[in-house]
Structure formats: C-alpha cells, structure tokens
Amino acid sequence: MPLALDFFLHYAYWIIFLWVLVEQFGVPIPSVPLLLTAGTLTATHKLSLPLVLLSVVLGSLVSDSVWYIMGKRYGGGVVKLLCRLSMESSTCVRRTENYFTKHGAGALVLAKFVPGLGSVAAPIAGQTGMKYRFFALFDTAGILLWAFTFTLTGRFFGDVLKKNPNALQWVEHFAFLLFVLLLLGFFIHRFLRQRAFLREIRMARLEPQELKTMLDHDQPVYIVDLRHPLDYLPDPRTLPGAVLLTPDTLVQQTEEIPRDRDVVLFCTCPSEATAAKMALTIRKMGIYRVRPLRGGFDEWKRLGYPLVDIPPQLTARAG
Image (cartoon, rainbow, N blue to C red; front, side):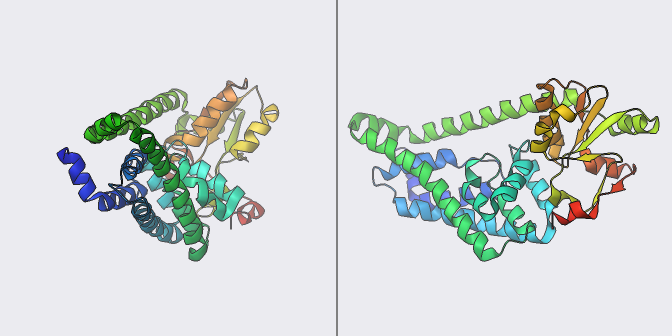
C-alpha cells in the first residue's frame, strides 16, 4: 500500500475533521474531493461510513458555531471578511442574504451546496438574531445532507469498482494521486472563473471622484443602491438621489431605468461584486451606460462624500 494512502487511512477521521474545520473557517481548500475519496474507501471497508460522516459533522459544526457567535457579535463585518477569503467572493454575500430573506433558517439546509455560501451562512444566521438551538438543528441537517451526498457518491463509485478487482486495486494504489488531481482541477476551475469575472469588473468600474464631479456639476445620473436591508443597520444612509432596489427588483424594473443618462450601481460587497454582476446583467438587456462604483458605499463614505438618511420605514425592514 502506498505510504500516502497508508498515512491517510491511519489518521483518516482526524484528517477529515480538521480539513472540513479549516475549510468552514473560510480557508479555500475544497472538501468535496476529500469526501469523494473517503466515500470510495468506505466501499472497501477500510473506512467506516458513520465515522466519516461524524467527522464531517463535528468539523463543520464547530467552525459554524464560532462564526455564528462572531456574526451575532460583530454583524456584517464578519461576513465581508469571510467573503474576501472565499474563492466565491463574487457571489457569496448577496446569495446568502437573499437565501435568508426568502427561506429563513431553512437556508442553512442547502447553503453548503452553493459555492461560497457554506461558511458565510453561519455568521448571517447570528447577525439576524436566530436562536442557537434552531441554528444548530438546521445547520446539522444541512451538514449531514451535504456529507451524505458526496460520500455516498464516492461509495457508489467504490461499489462499481468492486465488481472489477483489478480496477479497484489500481484506484487504491493511485488514490492519493487521484485526490491531488481532483483538488488541482477544482482550484484551476475556480481561479479561471474568478479571474475572468474580475477582468470584466476592472473594465467597467466608475471612480467615486468621477461620480462626485458628475453630481457637483448637476449632470443627470441614475444611482442605484443594491445593498441588502441588513447592510443598512450599521449606517442607515445612502448616496444623494440613490434609488434603493434589490438585484431582483432591478432586473424586473429594467424598463423604468433611463437610457439617456449614466446608471451607477453600488453595494458593499468585496470588489463591488454584486454591482458589477448586475451591471453586466442589465447591459445584456440593452442598457449600456451602466457602471459599478469602485469601492461602493464604504469607499464613498471613507472619502467623506455626502450621504443622506434612508427613510426609517426602509431601515425598519432590516431589524
């Protein structure tokens, strides 16, 4: 038996526990290849399926509980930090906030299946004030569903290989190499996708100084605040003249967006991700004078540019 595989089998449950723990703390090391490999090895009875699942649940629940507490104490800042660590920072804030708005605690059951959401769901649950017992119940259900899906997929693959002893022996011999190749493929795919997305963002962004100049000279501009209501809680203000719309509402109201002036979108996501994504979306609908604001609300505020209060009835929805 190869040394790497022998080492893994000897410490498998600790490796799985620590790997999932670290991933759910926000470090972008995907667990799926590991779960598939572990599931395959359960078919040969070299690993116990219940113990593999227990290792996954404990590793994920420990990290999720820590992030739940951090989210409850520090709010949206924790979510932004996690999204900067995540390889899916282009989507994780907005998707998770929308999941919780629509599904409440039930969002935890499916969050781990959506890239970038698994680790940020827990602090948002804390931020929204969800009771810990409900969080732990739904989070555990989601972890089990996620772990079952990938370990049983690996187990099915292993059961198929058992019908061909030569193939099974080959897989056992090269199991570590296959795991490394899966991991590299996962990283390369995410890296290329993220790089293409960021390249589009850099080409489209509008500098805050440019927008400030436009407003100072009374140039007609249509400003859209894409932040989630939860983002209003730390500072219930917005840019002068901004219209408050969620991404879904913006898409539904594209006919009302003026075509005779610049359209500026902003959010609080890392790298202006939501604003950039929505700019690309509505461009495809024929609105070409649209750009995301570089740095979004946080950069505009940091520069000391003017802000206006958001009506109390809108901020109350986030509470």
